Length: 125
Image 1 (spheres, rainbow, N blue to C red):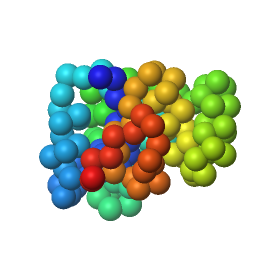
Image 2: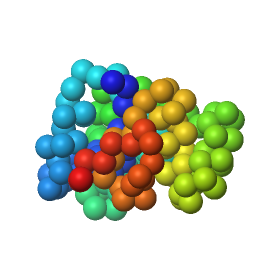
Image 3: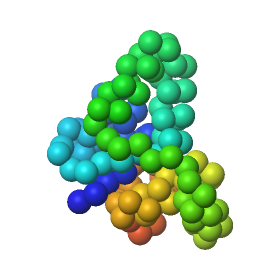
Image 4: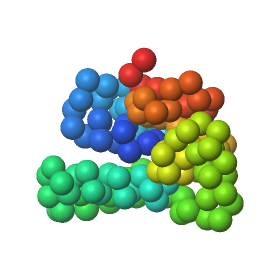
C-alpha cells in the first residue's frame, strides 16, 4: 500500500504519544511512502517550537531518508482547492489529501479533520 504519512503521525511517533506504535507501523515499514512539502513546514515548525531548531533539522533529515517528498505542483494545488471546498478542510490538510491522491496513496494520520474522508487511515480510531 502506498501511503502519505501526515505530520500528525510523524509528531505522534517522535513524541511517543498514545498512538506512536500505530504510526510506527507505517514509518518503520518498507511501504512506499511520501510527504508533502506542507508536511515539512508543519513538522519543522512544531519541533522548532518545542525542541529547538537542531532537533527540527534532524527530524527533516530522517524524513528525507525514509520517504519521497512531493512538492506543491500546480495540478496538486488545483486539486487541493477542490478538496478544500468539498470536505471543508484547511489549506494544509487539503494539500496533504491532494498530494496523497496524486501518488495514489492513503493519508496516514490521526487528525480528526480527515474523519470520514475516503483514502484516509486514522491511527486513533
